[in-house]
Length: 389
Image 1 (cartoon, one colour):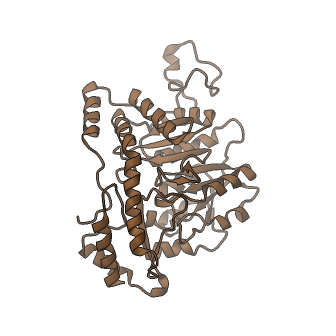
Image 2: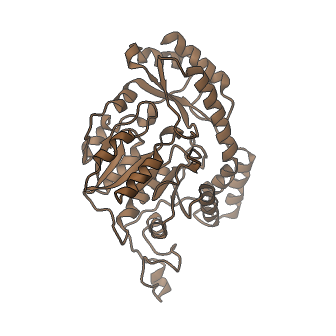
Image 3: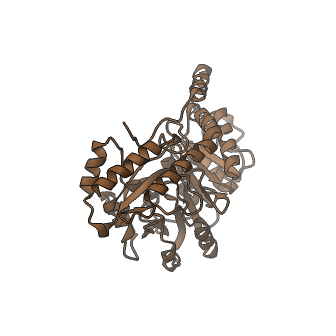
């Protein structure tokens, strides 16, 4: 394909790492998962990391952990503030644990939650805010963190699309009480499938360790406060279940890929940002196209384009031309969650009119970015759109 949505970032290092695990004969979660967790948490300047099999699973156990805290746990029926646009599995665990979603519109330029609408919609029933940085672009994480602190709310940070982005010199994914990452093929590092939970809270760390693996105690450190004491009967202790957990463990294969990919992340992000500068030079100032306004330092997951609804551009004609020119595209992060059939299952409200998320849903799309020089592809993209729009 002339301009695809993603490309492999693996080299011989990743292949050799995979072979070393295969030859060892030990493929499930082990020493390499622990090594990657330590290296990833250090890179992000956080105390604790728990690797899982996907970013979606990271969201699942992150939400679950807040329900099992000893002090101030979340409860079914509590309200949580969320943006109208994010990936589906940002929302699903919230519903699955019985939370009421208060869905807030986005800013049309940044595509992140409209910070002006957040504080006025915090009530005595609000117990958490979910901050999502869309497609590499930091949300107003500093302001969301401040609001969470002001009103004694949990701040859940979904950073699955925005690894290595920064706001005020701090990495996205390090603002939340608990934060999540994804290592899917098209993301900033790729481990086949994979995800991570980060936190500075030791109790949440131990809860996630248990929830990741069946809800048992086997992976908990001796210092944990989740249990009074370990049983003297080793046979029983090996299968001691304390939480209604899951099996969302990673494999050693994914972990060694993460170790190698993390070594490359800085340079890969630099190339993504070089491509972002090319994209901006082509599209900034063209009133036909609304592109994502950078907040902080974007890690440029992809390039979003919203066809200006005031220009009456035929999106079907645009999409047809992109297909004819072998250019891949997708809806922006799954579009507005309110426009999907799954919403009928949620307990939710929209306290303010949802305008911008619907515009992005109806007039927006994104094209790919990856750590290769995409000057030719982006130039061709603009030429195609310039002819048809």
